[in-house]
Amino acid sequence: MKEKTRKIVVVSVMAVFLFAVSLFCILKKDNFYSDSERRVLAKMPKISTETILSGKFMSDFETYAMDQFPMRDGIRGIKSANELFVFNKRDNNGLYMQNGVISKKEYPLNEDMLDYASQKFNALYENNFADKDVNIYLTVVPDKNFYLSQDGVRLSVDYEEIAEKMQEKNKFMEYIDISDLLDVEDFYRTDTHWRQEKILDVAERLCSEMGAEFNSSYETRELENDFYGVYYGQLALPVKPDRIKYLTNDVIENCVVTSYATGAPQQTSVYNFEKAVSKDPYEFFLSGADPLIIIENPKAKTDRELVVFRDSFGSSLTPLLIDGYSKITLVDIRYVQNGMVGNLVEFKDGDDILFIYSTTILNNSTALK
Image (cartoon, rainbow, N blue to C red; front, side, top):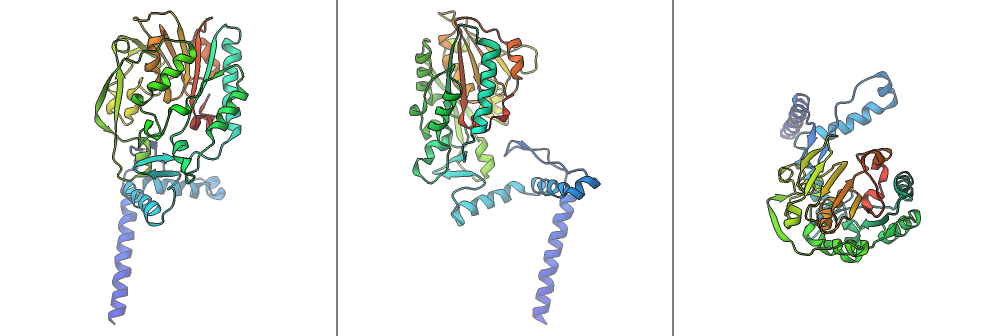
């Protein structure tokens, strides 16, 4: 009798628990956005005869249920801890952690994506400056995981192979290799990006190869708030946060910066302190994602101009190139159509043109328009 009572109690408790969780899920207001993962969460899929018969409704509903499940971040953290520390798996959903450093698996190399990126770059060349006397350069930023993978445990695309293939596919560019200047310590521990205070040698090499003046005199400052990078939220484990340091001098602080994020020109600054307390504090550098930014240097000792085609790594690098140019134009073709570039940017004889992209973007280049 006692055994029967025990079983009834267990089943009853489980039934109440499942009912309570189900009721909570039904009554709970859906979350639109996950701050920790920095992404929009799935919505309740629409029900129709077509989606039910095709199986799409149940597939979409499963994604929706996982995204909107109560206490989701806590459960994700438990899963990550079990995967990495209990079952000793090398990664959790493609995320590695080693000595407090988080990285993401970028593997395998997708040559079709390199072809796609190169088609976009070649179209820019043919449509805008093939007939100009300009100097065109390419540099590829290695992923942090490339350096962590040297232990033979973590998977990473072959940086040298990507660099070689991009040179083969874009023969109108002069390649500038920066891979030997970087290591794991040059990247934020919880984020994909590099630390500005660690890449002065990268900026110096780029300036040297492009024949531009380089200024190594900067004051290092630090933002007050902790920086929890994108990998921190994705892994959902308690890891020591980073701090953002930035380099400044009189030239940077006197630049005239114009953003075209809304389509109309708006005055901004090299370092945007409002963005420093946003969901992604890395956007402190040049206000983050922006299709077109123009930086004018009134203290320039030259009339040289630079056009940078870039991803987010260029946001923290470009301020370190300002001393060598009177004007720098940054173009992000993830947000502006390739065919519109000629209407927005004037290319002139003597200009320097730099393409700087990370291996992550090149290996997933459908983001380029």
